[in-house]
Amino acid sequence: MAKPEIHPEWYPEAKVYCNGQVVMTVGSTKPELHVDVWSGNHPFYTGNQKIIDTEGRVERFLRKYGMYDSQNKKDKSDDDKK
Image 1 (cartoon, rainbow, N blue to C red):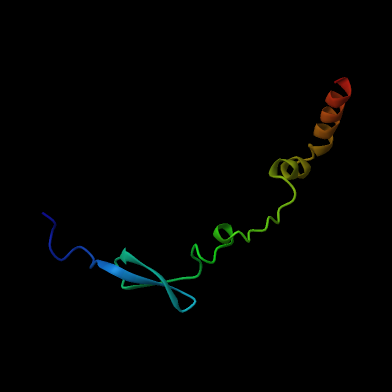
Image 2: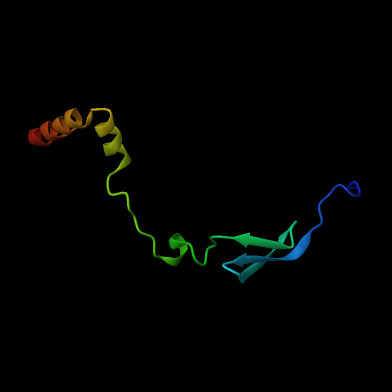
């Protein structure tokens, strides 16, 4: 049996607000939740996602640690052999 008076109050119909509008209701320990981002306005879910990073992580790492030129030379020499 659960101990009395140690558990938070449960609100089965807690309202979630985003930009002052109710966007959904969920169960929560708080009666109201205020969020900045939700699936209705997040770029990933709305299809408006823009990829800003045009350079890959590996290339950035190689360039940062000075291995980019030697790696490119190896790749070019391998291509010449084929």
